[in-house]
Length: 250
Image (cartoon, rainbow, N blue to C red; front, side, top):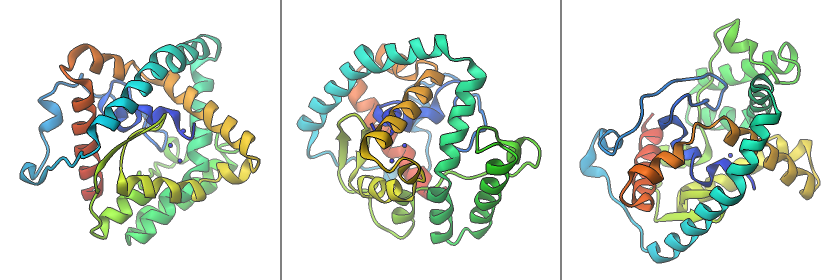
C-alpha cells in the first residue's frame, strides 16, 4: 500500500514511469525522454477517455496539502537521505521492499489468469530472497533474465470490468480513484511488509523508509510538472487516469 503507506504515491509514483531514469516496481531501470503535455495524450482509444471528478474542489484542497507536504517535508528529507546513503544502497533498499510486495503481483497475475507472470513472480521471489540475500539484490533479472510484471488489485478489478469510479486525491498518498482506493486496501494485506513489521508504528516506519528511499531516487519528476504545466492538478489527474487505464489494458 506503494508508501505513509507509500509516500511516493503522493504525486510522483503514478507518473514514475514517465520521468527520467525511472526505477520500475520489479527493480529494472528504464530511461524515458522528458515528458510533454502532448506525450501524455498519445494513448489508444482516446474516445473512451472520460474524467469523472465530482469532488474536484475537495480534491484540489487535498492536492494543495500534498503539494506543500512534498516541497516542505518529503523532498528535503529525501535529498538529505540521498546525500548520506550511497546510490547502491538506495537501490538495494528498493529491491528489498519490492521483493516484499511480490504477493501483490503474484496473486493479481494469477487472478487475471496470467499464470506465466505469476510463475515468474514466484521464481523471482525464491531467487532474490535466497541468492539476493533477502531481496536486497535482483539476481533473478540480472543473471537469469526472470522479469516481473507490475500488477495490483486495482488492475485486477479493472480486468474484470469494474470501472474506475470517480477520481480521488488521497491525503499523502495522492492520485487515485474509487476502484484503486479499494485495491490499495487489498494490496496492503498482501504486502509482506505488514507481516514483517506487525506493530502499527513499526509498519508505518518501514513504509516511511521505503517512501523516502523511493523519492530519493526520483529525478524531480513533480518539479518538472509544476514548472511546465499550466494547471498541475489537471495534468496529474489526466495523466493518472490515462496511465491506469492503460495499465488495466496492459
